[in-house]
Length: 473
Image (cartoon, rainbow, N blue to C red):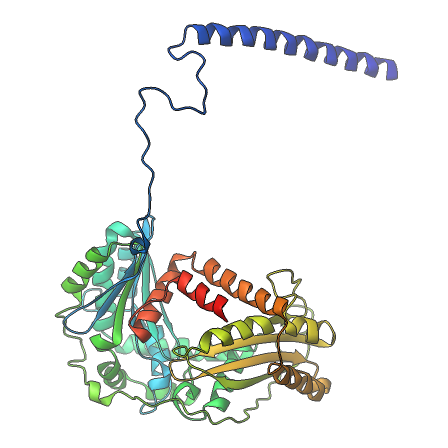
């Protein structure tokens, strides 16, 4: 058997050698024959071919090619656009409204409007009609509400821009708000609140609670999610009253990424300039202009999670805390240093593998999670608004070790006042710049950045400007 195997191997090697020999010899001969009769004998591929036109490469003449262009219409509506190569674009309307403006209303109106978005309008009979219209242009739509901004956005093909702006105008200014839609929204809100209370991840609830404690009963401390008691209080009349006060053109920005600015302005003039909203004329005099008042305080919640489980293994019983301090608004010069500090604190879950760029060298990893293995989580967050801000640390551990956990997190806050090492500071700056540039690769993120900056400041700081500011500190 071994003799047969050796014989087969010799035969295979022999055939391979003969094949390679003839292939090389006749291949070279054929190449020489082809080259000798070719129109361009002995031409190197590194030199340009004679008679071929010189290629013209795309170039950028200064920064004006990628600056954000801004135009203000006669009614006060601002239009901001950022051109970006591609077949698709993201266009949307951002409104300076949210839960912070609900002091005169039952909390939860902004939450309701988010769930009612892209329902039936004057032009479209139902949400299905809107989605079918967008599908013709490969589009999708979404609405998101935060404490200070409501954002209606559509991503679709560039050639469908006219349809997209028309649809956005109808969805924002001409919603029908039918009784059956409001009743369906009440069911959706109730389900979302129930899901929020049963979710194992406590971060959304903790964020709500830290804002309620820090700004008790005012502006950004008002509930972002509709309280259960308010679900049945909200009706069409109340929604129209809120929309009349806050959905005025001077409080809106039409932002677009991936389209020509002149084309967007033309569509805005066509669909957003002389349109009368379904709720009538806006009354700017009733806008709540309260400034956030930091009060400080403690908010506690006890929850029984024993009957909530994602599988056969029960969820561990943990105590979650979030400790925060007041910081500055995003309009102040100290905003960038606080963003660097947030990156320096970093952190994450105890089961995160970590690694360079994932937070393994941040303070909450080195000083907390690596030293105290009984802690499940330690993560830093930074929330910033136009008149205030919060720097928070979220931590999780067994209920029997709450006291020690609070002491450890408090010690980290105290150590923030000390000096930072040069390598630690440079690493945090590099991570912040890396995260900024990586996120701004995405078209929807660029859209949100353009819209939010223009809505709050009237202009947009470009990424390289922000990177320069980060490097200065």
